[in-house]
Length: 289
Image (cartoon, rainbow, N blue to C red; front, side, top):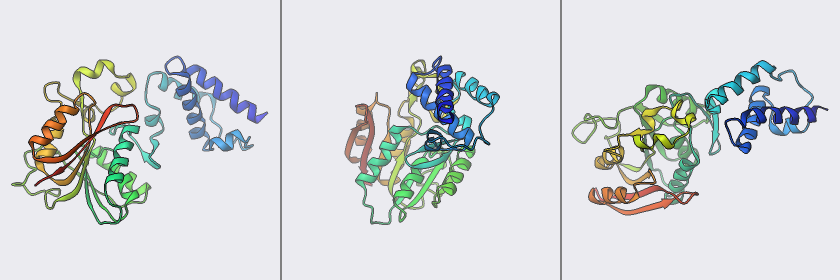
């Protein structure tokens, strides 16, 4: 009886969500809702756990469904997400990490030695997911993350604590004139072995192609760049020559422009890597300086 009631509840929640989401996504959200509101795993629910003490009231589920139908991301509703094996806190001050960014982490892992003590800088760290994932994989690495948002830095520090890694985070505007070789700062005091970044790279004109859950809820400052300067952040980071190895997540529309930019700034070994969907998504290069 209990097993059937859980399946019926999942079907009921999913059927309401299909007004705004594809069927498979709606069903996955329904499970997520039930797992979060009951503090029971999917296995426990499917195996007919008899403890219904923590089962949500109808009103609680209705409120969550309403928020989802207004396209509020489920990750913000519950204040967390699971990504690349990490349990990450999230707030609307930080982007929701994507599979493409996990591929960026994988590329760094594949290209760099695991048995050396390397220094890593993550620029535009947001919730800290890249920095924390790299530190988790490589405990001997020294990892630093920076972001312009004080709120994002607070989330990143919380995520480092909850995932039991030591990463140093600083609030800093990488576009500031106060950062550079003539202006000492916490990130210019030495050369990094790796600089990795997933900076804002979506052009303003691309907004019309984006879903409401992104446009209405995720932080625009972490997403968008001006139409007349799509490589704004890449150019600034590359000009600083902070690291020997550079890894970027990029806009699929600009791989040739990115390659030309890095070449003009004396980077070598430039490679563009396609993501799982066949889109140009990662650029890596080495600095000669």
